[in-house]
Image (tube, rainbow, N blue to C red; front, side):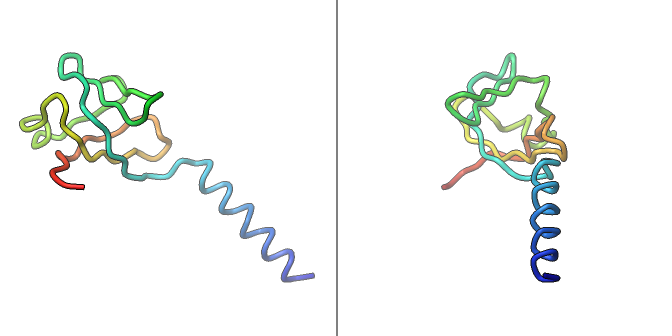
Length: 87
């Protein structure tokens, strides 16, 4: 009985953690620089309202580049960290 309760608590905690959209990384493709747009899937393209760009990334990214982004906790904004050069 105690084991079932422990498992239930763990399951609930993990579901709550996933629902909070913790920080994570994602790779996207720059489809436009002005205005900045990054495609992360066939259905989702992020515009500059959802993107923050580091100074380093700002100086090197071009249309067509793959970029490494970190999703801020909560999932409302992404930080473009750098250009992906392999993989």
